[in-house]
Image 1: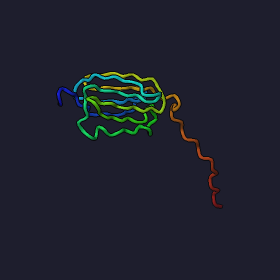
Image 2: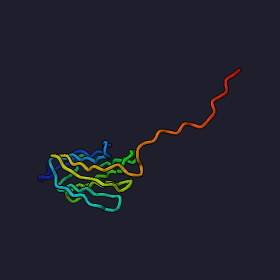
Image 3: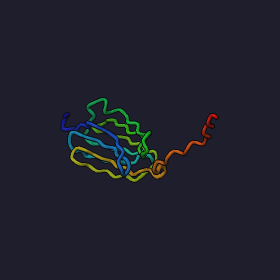
Image 4: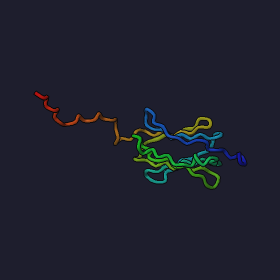
Length: 130
């Protein structure tokens, strides 16, 4: 790859038992840092990295999932890749790297809680014909 730079080859989202996960795959292990850009915005920066495929620059709208993550937006500038992670609400998270994969795991949001069964409809059954 270009001058020793690593390529970001995949960015994704998945729900896991403990909450949700943003995952990034690269051509090799990368140096990274995560910073807060606001109360509900995180920036994950992959140093000396670029995005070789336009499709990997597309944002991922995760707002329809019952998870803390609302949107994931990758971009590249000045020799690094920045992945903006917008949250619906602030929750604890951990970041870890395994070989060429980077994971940001978020706890379940408190407000959402477990899904509740739908309420039974309130209507009268039709009367039987005589």
